[in-house]
Image 1 (cartoon, rainbow, N blue to C red):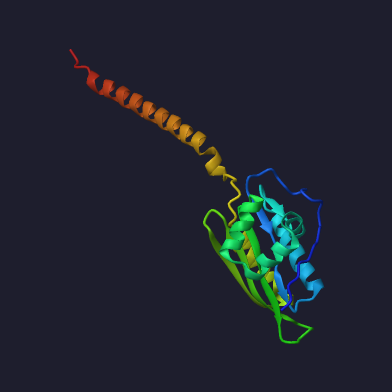
Image 2: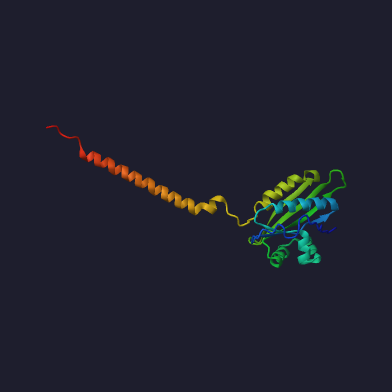
Length: 204
């Protein structure tokens, strides 16, 4: 069984650190019978998806190796245990770790089949989210879509939605508008009541 780490830098180190408290470590994957070119393409695509996530600081596999050492990273890739991933979060002050295992099935080099599992460890929940992989390599975009939907879009970046951000102002506005409508209704009712009490004049 082969264990390897692809050290790819597609952007300057730290270029995508957006100053958020939320940090994601992408360790890369443990590979078996996967060509270096295929490994490179897979990791570059996933890194690109992570870099597009707003308000998240991303550490690439090569940065993780620089900070943790290749021996420790290889150990984590081999085990992917809760304890090892929790330890990575502690060492790097990270909130999430993404890793996993991928291998090719059979000997078809034209349409190789990838099998494995992509894992995201969540420090706050002390648990995992996973995406299972069993696809031809030329269908890997479908796997990437699952990773985006289940592992990246669900990262809590601390960003507030429009409603969350402006809900206090909206609430105050609704109270003011409600009070104005109530005052207007009350004023109209009083006016109608005064007209009714006057009655119709009796002729002499």
